[in-house]
Length: 389
Image (cartoon, rainbow, N blue to C red):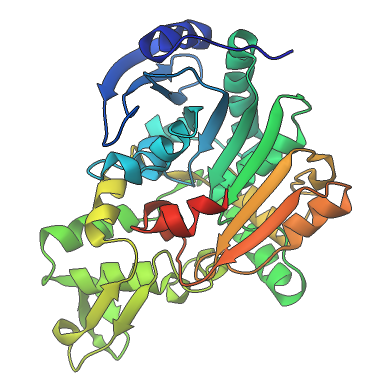
């Protein structure tokens, strides 16, 4: 049975804080442009699990439902969905809050961990269990309809959680730029990626740092300085720091690494043209400025991704259900799956498997001209992407 609530703002967050249990809590309030734009935010780092839970509530009206926001690998709620420095109406958080939803961001425990604290057990199932603990605690006191909304690895978590969640209050799953099972040659490539991460686990390497945050920070601090990376037209020369950061954002798929190939092109739409020397390279970002990328990555905690999580995700991409299986056939909520053409691309097999399980409320859309991060940080994402869900 669902409940209707009359509480708003701080009163509602106080009840939620008690439901979540002990932990370090901080409060923040703010307002944006337009009427009914007041909001308040509670951030709790749970002492038992190390999870960080952010709750953003409207101060002028009670919520009609809950959106659980699940960040991508290595990201946290603030970086992915509440990016510092941007206008309030540019955040996905405020976009959903203005629709009458209570926003609950669940940041995984690795964000507050050192590499030595991350274990071989922090795969996709462990992330799902952590999320279920938060959802269960809030459902006991709120009993509101809810949805999972995730980006990248967080979207895979949203799908996995939905497949294990039989609550009638789970109404929707919003999937932002993630990858389900491939077929053919891409599935074989994904299996090789799975094997790389399985090998790292066997060697005792339990976490990886993608390194993008450092590249962007260096590009902002000293854009013309030489980077350590060889310049493709002449490997005896080096990218500038600004050039390397833009190349990594725009042409992610061309970078070395076991998982960069999954991008059709890159994290960010844009153009990169080599010049006669590294200093003469020309580059531009189409939707998300470097300043926004810097604000997002500066908000990260550890920035680490558990190796076990990457192994499980790669197993999903490979269709290797012996290593990890998302129960596609048990997802009964509405699914709105939105990929970007330059990010994870037009690969609808995951959506097809949900439909094959008997769920006909499944949509799959590819947004042209957008990269992986543009779906959440792009200047026109609200019109081009968020309007689709």
